[in-house]
Image (tube, rainbow, N blue to C red):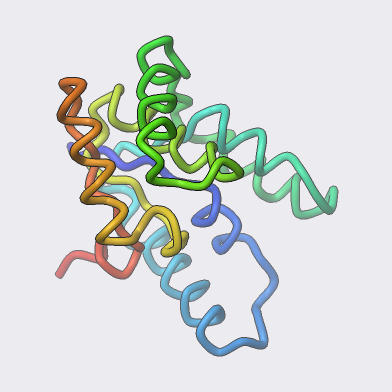
Length: 156
């Protein structure tokens, strides 16, 4: 069975109130469709990075996010993952304030996860950035997960 790391934006879109923004609403629906129809095809996981971010904000929404996360595998943030996070950041690929995004990739890479599912198209599901992060991962002997949106992992 293939594996997928669910980044925080996926969890947030899954439980969020329907948006009035038509694009966001479409992403929310796609996320819900993936969860209902595709998740059983994958070993789904998160890390403490996701848990920490999902635990902030409106208490009702936090409870919903935590309920989803509670049924998932939690991947450890190892020393290797911390070192890879630092290497990604040291390469200047991502701005300092989004170190969590580097940590998502690093944890998934260290645990040899196949896919990283996200709606963060600015820093993660971004072809130019992903290419540069791939080079850092490979330099350190790690295979980067395929970073994609739920639309790209819908199957047939």
